[in-house]
Amino acid sequence: MSITVTTWFLEQTSPADQRPAAEPPAGVRVVRAEVPSPEFSRFLYTAVGDDVGWRDRLPMSYEQWRETVSRPGVETWVAYEKGTPAGYIELAAQDEGTVEVAYFGLIPAFRGRRIGGHLLSYGVARAWDLAERRPGTAPTKRVWVHTCSKDGPYAMDNYLRRGFRLFDTKAEEEPEPEPSGSWPHG
Image (cartoon, rainbow, N blue to C red; front, side):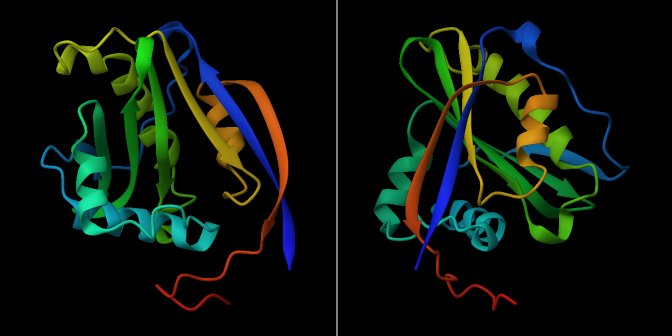
């Protein structure tokens, strides 16, 4: 069985495009995971993306995860609520001053609690100042992200409210995703 998946590609082309979200609830903070860890990265990826069909990284070996999260210009920023991981944003510097928001989202139990807008705002600001933390990296000229119809119902609105603009759309037939086995889906 297949489903039609629409993918939207969005961008900001200036730091002035940013529109920060309101402050999150008390007890929420965003911290950079400064020590690349395949285990922690895989935990965040499956905890955030399992119910929305993230599967592209699951076949990766430990070494492939390590290489991915250790690559220069890759940063993982984690939102915590009262010490518990709530979600993350992974930034990936690309050529000519482009930074991709490679992954972004919240663990299901933390969705709808005003954390996602704050995490996205904070992460995008870090995309714009990434060169300040990475000597030899070109200054950021563009930040881009893609989201799709499998993502949560508020994903697109969050990107638009943070100042992203649509630059491309694609629709493709895909096999209906099978649960990865992290948790039963109902």
